[in-house]
Length: 315
Image (tube, rainbow, N blue to C red; front, top):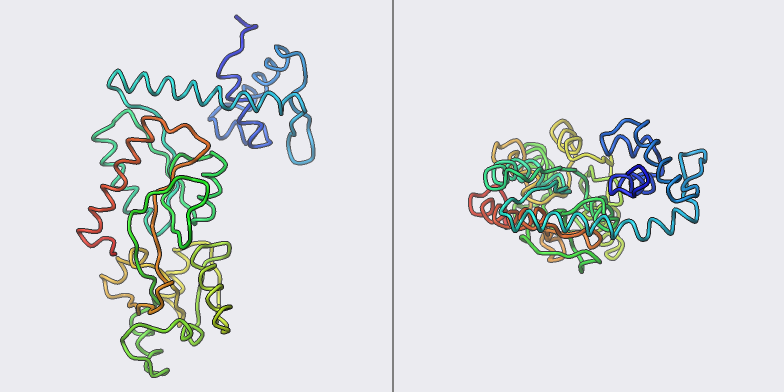
């Protein structure tokens, strides 16, 4: 039995190969580092050759490991899909589904998914990771996550997409400071021309970011400069800066729905048609679309429509 190839050993090998580190692989798998090292060593003895060599940053693949990895990944995916399908036929949908969510939708959607999936599919466990659209798109393309809810402004990429809703972008800021700034500039309550963004001190996401890329492209085409006073990689930081200072940002309604409803913040719509955001559900093109992932993918549009009806999100 000790000379047999196991799916567990292959799975550990693939994780070490993907992360380039025994330590990182052990952390992601929830195993002791010594267990991972022993499994890799046993697989090397079984195959009869070295799979990794150490470098200054961790481990790197040998040519033998590269050949094994190309066949191990589809084998593991097939085994997972086989087990998941069998469980589905038996009436038991189960498994772990990893979902990437942008900050604007993460709080409401993750909370609703916990209730919805927990009630209807108790055998499914959700793993939520939060990040900006570019980060989630990368992880989808690399097969690290199953599903993602991301923002898009252009044609879809190599993953599979389903549009959930479209929403306009707005200039957002503290209610009193936004009114004060508009009075100073003589700007009325109607839609704001994109060029007028140059007259507002902005706190924007750190690039690469979908909204930031859109704004930078528009500014370049229309030949004006954005007055960026701070860049932040966290929506919580952006909101805090707007609450405390004469600084503003460009965000969709659902990103600041609570702050707008409470009266803390106010917003001006942006008049240009290009300043609209599509919120889409994306599925990885590299991971098997398991029954568990399929059930979660079916729930997300239902929840999105519910949020649109009750006003949590807005078209």
